[in-house]
Length: 263
Image: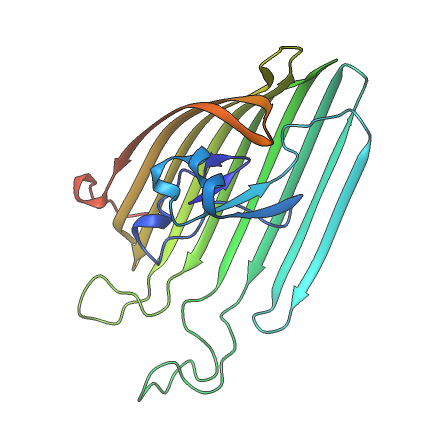
């Protein structure tokens, strides 16, 4: 399972290897790899492990800080520009981040297919571009914080070696995602419960796979998720939490979608 700040990414990446993951690493603070008992916090669907992308879209403090990044990769003329800023007071914090990516087809030694004369030295239909932003704010309390964020992510990417018919027609996908997150972490002065962490998320995701300017396949996923973790004080060196977790996903595959022309 791939999550963003502990909540499911809400995309279609688990139902097909050609579906992009709707997260962004350039604006992340850290990437966690979870295995073993820790995956129980994320439900039975995470039995194989969890990759959790952690960022500051919901700020935890009002300290002023900023980051920026510029990258270039020669193998695909890959360009990246990203930045983030967080600031506030003792009682309120705001955050903004954004990124832009663009690349050509990947360079490869020779051709990707036998008897392929064109696109020699390039992996056809591997180019992509992407952009996104997040805005968030938090109310800072003496024992924690409560915050809300909204984000938008757009990607257009090629799918190498993929076709929905017998002909070798290049396929690319247009993906859009809107995401809202409400996160709180509160420490408690209680004999049994030490803290309560709450996370609510709403994600509206869709991607179209396009051939010859026609939408051939569409995947849409509207998801709702809520998780409340009540952490207890150590009991004979045992640490843990009681969790209430709810998730609903309205997944719409391509069979129920029309095939309109993009023009």
